[in-house]
Length: 334
Image (cartoon, rainbow, N blue to C red; front, side, top):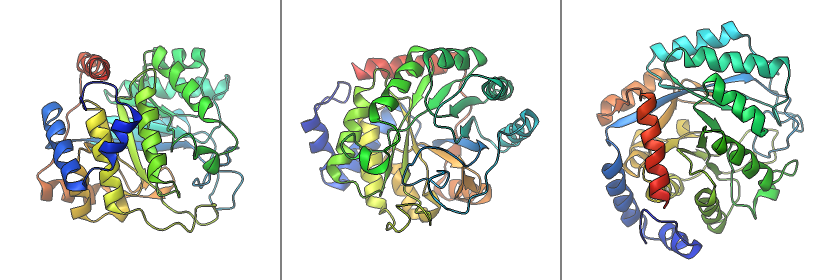
């Protein structure tokens, strides 16, 4: 299979099911062709509005459908976000992500405040990412004009399994928003979650869906389910590192220039297991002791990990470098 051309489902399935050590070797080779393997982008994710979401995502502590004991928090002030962004930049983050527990963005005072947040974070020199739910084309345009670099909107799993996880929105809803994001000139951040009861075929379907997006994802978060008491998936067993490694390696091979982000569930991994993920092509982490509402390794633990593995935080990219990277991603896509 050509690494720089769209792949058929059969080719993706063969890749996914290949021997895991061969898969890691191939992914590591691709990774070194397109990235400095010692560099890992450090990102910060801040919940700017917590809880009370009307969606019924089976994994989420923030859904209003489940009793998880989460304390709701209204939209943060602009000053609170400014302070958090300045702390993140000082700690070495080069990407600042803001998440709001909304089903969709609604025009009005709160969206206007989010636009101001984007402008404020952009002024720090960090890349700015948001995950706010579904967007219209005009809202995507306004975010881009405010300085938004990326928008996260995960597909979570394959389309066939998706209704088992969420019933308050459709897969097509997600893809429509991703289309608005790409057409507005915002880079697409889109990935999935492992460990929700999905099969290997569902994971292959997810990889196929990512390849078929109208704008190739510049960022692919690979999440391991963090089971949360009170949610329908609260009793799931821990995802194995080999499941994570297999998905990370496939993402790296299929999207050579993308940032593959080792995301939720990283606190469940040992140092050796995280090293395997980096070897397989992961080149981004989220820093801090919380990832939205779930536990996460702290900054000190991350620095110790980097020191042990001789890794370094990737320096900020200039705007022109980001444009070049996106152009290369489109070329790779064929």
